[in-house]
Length: 94
Image 1: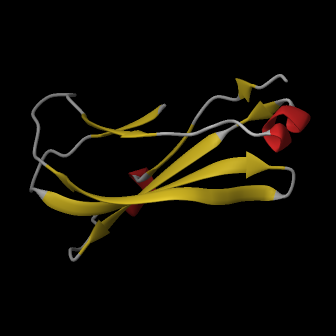
Image 2 (image 1 turned 60 degrees about the horizontal axis):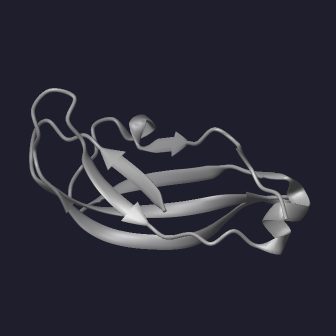
């Protein structure tokens, strides 16, 4: 299971989370979800879980990196540069 944590300090928003996995030729999208994100104080996050099953292609590469991109829907994003996160590489064996 993969968990994406989002922080939101100003207004309740609707966002789309797109998840990508690394491949030999770049990132490939494998999941997308539209969610409501409430306002939370401090460094608290709203966590959204996604399932992922490792494949033989992942094992052939030996490691995989995940990328999450959040896009605010129906509102202006004052700082779009902070809407992406890349995981540390995860070792995959057969």
